[in-house]
Length: 441
Image: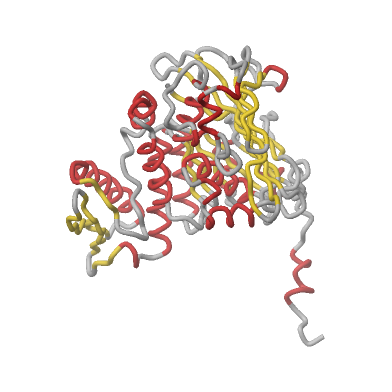
């Protein structure tokens, strides 16, 4: 089973005070499923438009659903509180995604998951959470039927259950849903006809990978590890689905900490490090080898990565910012190539324009997953202009303009000349004279 993100709506994160709606495919779902020219999206916009807010919201969404502590984790809760728009006092995140058979691309189902976080009495709570199932193949609001509904911490609707207050799922989630998603609270319940779509949504979320500049991607490894281990033995089918999706991607390689590797998985870890070495050599030809220094700790190896160059060696923790950026990108790009849905904030930061452009070309042509990234670099505009749903321009007032092919017109020329709707760059070089010169006045 493979998943595809169809639409993402976000409001109330940081400076976003209007709904941002990003579409990744057409409204009509055709069978067999094919998204060859829609697997990558670049988000552009001026400084402060809210590009990073989109990525922050996705990080919060992934963390909330994969971590059993949820909003009871004071550090995470504080982070969420600071990220919620101060005027709206709530954050809304809605994802629409579909499933299809990987072997024959046969369509299966489409779900929509909404979660709203709010500040109440100075604390962050899950205000409401809903899950919808699409009837038919038109991705429009009126075609979605509500199948799960949580309001103010209580489960009030679950499709096929008439007396919900006497159900097992109601008793298992009671008094927990104000600080946790129903997806994580029900993680130990085996899949049944009553909760099958909750189960499928968990599988989808496990295949999300979010890269934001402030975080070491070791965080993704920890979240996924805790998420998989938290599933009980009766949920082995779900474990198998999640673990199978990671067959080509076993390790997140940290640039900041030691890697902790189960002894029985060390061979696979070595292969991942070797791949990292090959990747870094493209950018640093004088890199000779990445050596793994390991120490045994019970049933794990504590592994340190040492980079050997022509004339010196260095622990990866003390490498340059550029190399650390490449290690983080390696994790994200391998995840995407392996079929995950990957979000990268400021993809181009600390990366040379030529390398950046070639990576975009590679992901466009070879990735089996989805890639959504923010950038200020203009190179991807020309690379992606022939794709569908691949270029979005975010304005300062949260309006999104998606590029649609228009004869021979160039999206790059329109963008830099301020001709994209709601995104005029009304600036001239002389505008900088007053703030940057004439201090003697």
